[in-house]
Amino acid sequence: MLALEVVLADKASVPTFVFDEVDAGIGGKAAIEVGRRLARLAANAQVLVVTHLPQVAAFGDRHYHVLKSDDGTVTTSGVALLDDDERVAELSRMLAGLEGSATAEAHARELVDLAAEDRALR
Image (cartoon, rainbow, N blue to C red; front, top):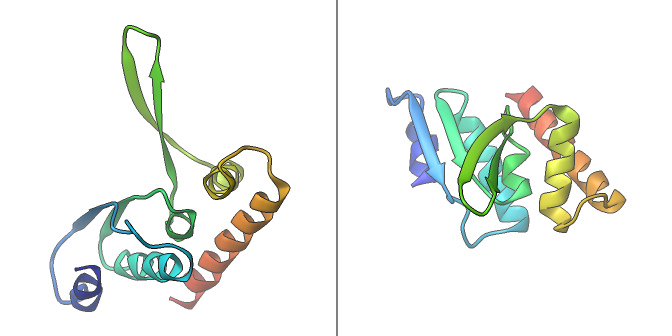
């Protein structure tokens, strides 16, 4: 479905695409390619993606974090736009499953840089 939408994007008049878990069951190199294709699709339409894969998230123009809190009685949710440093920290957390990993942070920066290089070529 994603492949068809990317190919037909400049011919269609769909203003917004929403993908929830479009990357389910993939990882690594395939996830990077899905991220690239979603970014390409975003050149012609607004694209909203719900993902748990840092390889996909790195290709977004903006990164939002969904927050959930529970005080035992009430559960609330919110959404926060991440700045560049927060984005790297979140991608790092997504990669390592923990906070503060220098190795994961370096990998997150590498993904962000790769996405920026791709963006410059568009």
